[in-house]
Length: 120
Image (cartoon, rainbow, N blue to C red; front, top):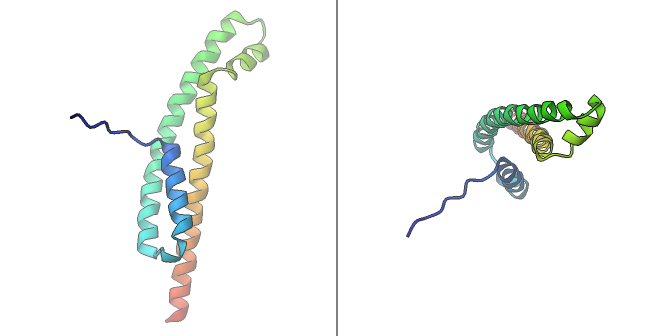
């Protein structure tokens, strides 16, 4: 029997990590949090590369449409209705969510570290 491995999308990874952190915030220690930060930072790097590819695909489509449209604004409106634009914009919003998650973890780490230092 052949096992089918489904790779998680970046969106799924962000959602799962966010939910995991939200549910387990009381159990989160600085070491686990730091490991999550490394994982999320690596994911951000991958997402940036993915966004660049999606932006290139959108700009290619826009260029194609500009050849048949009389005005640049009409070409842009048509291009923004295409799947390439939707994919690119969705990835940009995923990046914003990921950056916010990274910021939250950094803030958490700082607060926990200060708390530990104050208790000593």
